Structures are given as structure tokens and as C-alpha cells.
Length: 231
Image 1 (cartoon, rainbow, N blue to C red):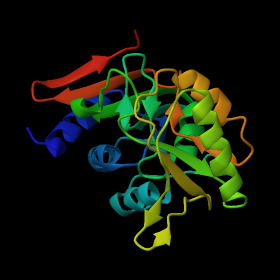
Image 2: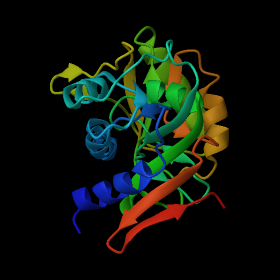
Image 3: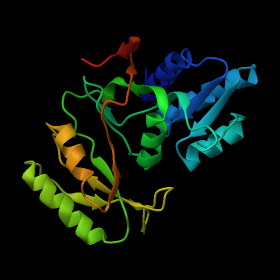
Image 4: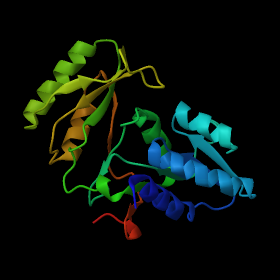
């Protein structure tokens, strides 16, 4: 089973939790896109849902495939969000934002009664940090914000480069008009402490640590899909 097949397996398993009439948060990324394709087939067969996309990219795919969409202002409380993750550990702490949509993803997930993470088994780690941590920052005062993050990392015993994300030759800009600093910290032994202190830096808009947000995860591997709940 290749990587795409595993993503499809996870998406198929998550689709079983979608019920008629649901207000649904729809995630961003390659695994979430497999879910959108499967969801669109169900909608074509008569399933009634209203979706809130977490990115412009997801919105375009949903509209192309016929999945009905609303804004989060129109549906401020959601039943369920289904989204992928770049990494997750046994406590269901996530790193998200590889696709650049972490702010909207976190807002949508937090507005939902439940969040189901869909991922292949390569995304499960013992300790977060193999995947660089995306930190969404305001373009104003970028250098000052970078220095503040570096000092915070030093206080927490973390080290590693902060790279300004680029798209080709241009600086990558999120749907909200912000930049992303990817933090190559390596192991993050205390994600909660890092999350709290990143939130205290004025130039940080949001970070990709999702803590106590996911309800459970569906993890796909060669043997099929399994459910992972927090320890």
C-alpha cells in the first residue's frame, strides 16, 4: 500500500462519522483532499452537509466537486472537523501547518464539537519535532519577532534554525496575509510550555501546536486503519 492509498483508507474510515445534516469543518492538505473527494461522492448520492473550509485551496476543491460551503460566520458552531496532521504523538498533540493553513485550521477545529485527525502511520511519532514547527507571524516587525522566538527557544533548551517560508522566489503568504517561520527545533519535549510562551510573543499570530483539540485519530497503515485515542 503506497502513501496515497493509506491516506484514502484513513479518509474512508473518517467518512463513516459524517452524518446527514452535519455542519462540517473541512481540513487542508493531501490527506484532507482525499476526504473531500470521498465526501463529494456521498453528497452527489444525497448526503446533506454544510462545510466550512480551512483554506482557500480547500474551498476551491469543494466548489469544484460540489460540496456545499458556508463561512464560519454563517456557521459559528460546527459538529465535526476532519483534518490531517503533519505529526502527532500518543497524547494526540499535533503539529499542523505544513500547508500554511494553521490559523484557520485551529479556529475551525476549536469551533467544533469534535475533531478527527486522519493520517498515515508515518505521521505518528514518540516526541514531536521531527517535522518543523510552523509559526505564523505578522509581517510587521518580523526581525523582532524572530529574535523573540530565538530567545524563547534558548530558555526552553531548544535549538535550531528559523526559516522564513518561501514559495518559489517569493515569501509565502498565508490566506490571512501573514508569514510563516518554520522552526527546526528537532525534539520538542514540552509542547505545552512552548505553546504557552509562543502565544505571549506579540508578533506571533498562531503556531502549529494543537493541544487538547483532537478527539481521536484514524491512522492508516499497510494492515488497514486503526483508531488512536489519547493516552
